Image (tube, rainbow, N blue to C red; front, side, top):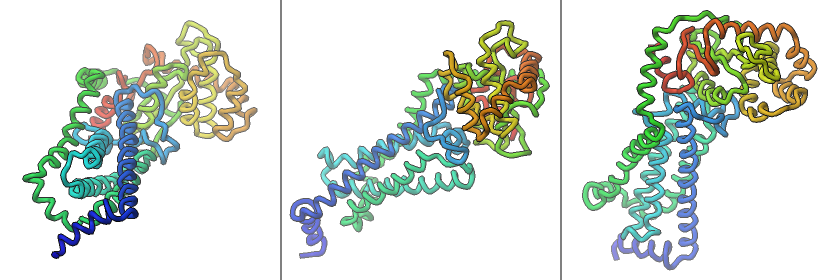
Length: 419
C-alpha cells in the first residue's frame, strides 16, 4: 500500500466514518468557522452602513462603537484609509466574507465532489483575510491613531476563522500545492468566486449610492466647491465658540458651524463633522451655538421658551470652564428628543455637571450669568452679519460652504486646501 492510499483511508476512517472523536472535532471546527465568518459579515455590514450614512450626511447619530477619541469607529470610517477607488473597505469586506461563507458552506450543500479541496481553498481565503486585518490594524495604530472596536472585533474573528479552517484542512494541507494549478483548469470556479468580491463590492456600492441619487451628489459637490471658492469671506472671532481640534497649531482648514441644539438637521450633521475633524489633523471645528430663539438671539424675531438658549449656555460653560464643550454638544444632540417637550432644567444641569466633572451649582451659576448670555448674543450677531439663513450653516476658512455637512463636500474642500 503506497503512502497516498494509506493517507486516504486514514482520512476517511478518522474524520468521517471510523473515529467519532475526529468526526466530532471536525464538525466543531466547521461550525465554528461558519459562525466566525457570519459574525464578521455582520460586523462589516454594520460598518459599511455607517460609512454610507456618514458619507451621505444622513447619520442619525454616532456609531454605537464610539466610546472616546481613541476608540471611535466614525473617525476611522471618515479617514482617507476607509475606502479604495471610491469603494468602502467595509463593503469589500462584506463581499469577501459573503463569498467565503458560501465557499465554506458548499460541502454541506453537496455541491462539491472534493470537500477537502474546498476547505483548503477556504483556508487560503482566510489567510488573505488575516493578512488584511494586520495591515488595517497597523494603519489604525500608526497612521490614524484611532481604533474602531467593531473593526478590531472583525480582525480577531478573522484570526479565529483562520485557526478553525486550519484545523479542518490540516490533514490534507500537503496537497495544497496540487490545488493551485487546478485554478486554471478544473477549479476555475474558485477564481470566479474570488472575482465576485471586487465585482460584487463595486455593484453593491453603486446600487446603494444610486438609491440616494449619488450621481446628483457629484453635481452638488461641484456646485458647493464653485460657490465656496467665490464666496465673500466673513469675519469670525475664533476664540469664542466650542472648539474641536486634533492639534494645537498648523491647521489648514477651519470649519465654523452655527447650530441650534434643538435643530434636527444639526444633529444629523454633527457625527459627520466631528468624525471628519478627528480623522483629519489639519482640520478643526469651531461650533458656535446659534439658538433659534429671540430670547437670547437678537437675529431671531420670534421668542420661544428659552430652551435653546439654556442648552447653548450649558455647552458654552462646559467649554469655558473645562474645555469640554464638544462633549456636551455631542450629549445634547444625542438626547435631542428630550428638548422638544418640557424638561427639568435643574436635572439637565446636574447631568451635564456630572458629565464634565463640575459642581452643579457652579454650572448653574455660569449658565445664568450675564457674561454667558452676552457671549451667545455676540456669536449670534456674527451669524447675522454673515447672513446665515438657518442651521446648520457651515463656513470653511471664513467662506460659506453650502452642504458642508456632507462628507464628500468636506473631503473635496480639504483636498483643495491641503494639496
